[in-house]
Image 1 (cartoon, one colour):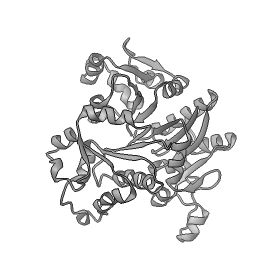
Image 2: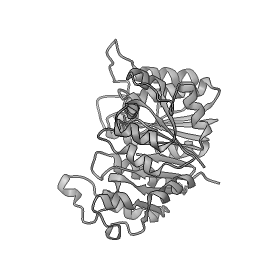
Image 3: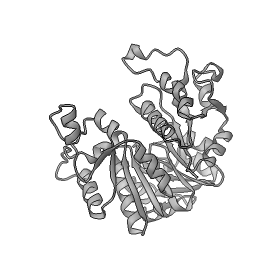
Length: 120
Length: 97
Length: 130
């Protein structure tokens, strides 16, 4: 049975290549049909904020890649409710509807569930 | 399942320690490396937070030594072979990059 | 135990030195390293263009020696490497760039190699950040 991998993405969308390179790990795993989960934590929740305009910064819009996740077989998508609340974001307005809002307690259990984890 | 969490950033002006403490589990351990060793600086909020939390707490010996910080009796300073052993003892390693 | 070690920070970052010391301790403890995978700024550890002052730790050189001596599988993520100008001969030719910054014992490959290592190993340990 394949080992499961949780990626915890903590960086805002355009704080360098972090958000994109975290997503690349997820998409690659999905492409190989591996059990991958993705949790947006801390500033990572900003990746899900609606109505972003990457072009204003001459940056790539990550939301297209995010929307592609289920197509790559990555359906285990999570967002930290506390991180969102602290940043004035409402999870119900997130660009990735499938992302399940979790409490800190849920996240402890989530990390436990996976065989490996990468937090970047 | 148990996780060894590893931190390497200074707790001052960085939220990794705070976030880690929110999600760290009862069976987990925390290893402070690099500038995260500053969390053991006495008289600071991180020091108090770690002291009262009662975690399985480790710090890389070279880092605490370089910074002339004393290892409190509720933490254990370890070398690299012990770091390897810890990574095996716990089911997985979560480095907060 | 089988370890997969992934490095995300550049050679001058303290975490990169820690990665090497951990890797050395793992082998000394009788464990196996299934793969070293360099991602994000970690690719700079494989650069042959890094010039370190004489009185400083030359980490790229130490990594090269370590991988060669123990015949380890040292993989550098090709996408991360291209973005950071760490090109091997083939890629430098493909993209018509002047400098070749990575060669043996390093291999440029994709993220599939990271996933493969994660599947093969008992433990994944990542180094990076600071």
